Image (cartoon, rainbow over all chains, first blue to last red):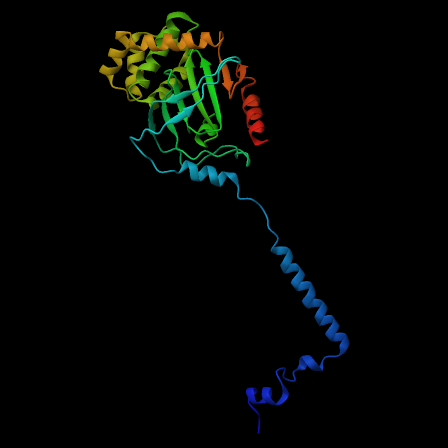
Length: 146
Length: 135
């Protein structure tokens, strides 16, 4: 009468007598080697790779929700001449949604990323400002329209 | 430049320079007047005036009124600002400010305190400032 699997297990111990145990030593070594190589390859695939691309941060920023009518305090630094200091703050601001998809050169990964929204406004002195108030770079453009 | 602004890397401040007499004044006043209706309109006007820069030497009041209206400004409000001298006072104050800061030519750019004249060195200057921020 043929024994059930569980019965066979009880009779012979946990490991049933399978073809695996009937392999010659040479074949056992080869099989062990194949198993070892497979495990090593899998470990290499788990190596930590790259930091998320900065463009995804920019895209998230660009799709920030619109807040119309809010007046966040903006820090627009009017870079002074070498001997003086001056700080301008935007006094009239309107938050708008920025463009949907940035086409810019990717931002440097270590540059501090602002957290506020794109605003249009005026500085304390009445100059015209556009940008994220906490942007790390402020450029003052002294230009004539002609 | 819009790439730097829209991605949050840089904010831009424009200070008008009145180095070419009445044509400079008229253009700057028109831009100022739309800015005081809506700050966003300033940058629309800014782009329009630079695109049509060759017309500004002989531009009349009507040109500026029509341009302001075309970009969305209210006509009556613009005309009042343009005519009553309020815009003129503001741009003259800004012009005086840049003189106080030693700016005599144009365009001159101040990028986080680094001054550069002309467009030729602008982007290297910006990139240099960014590199310093990374360090």
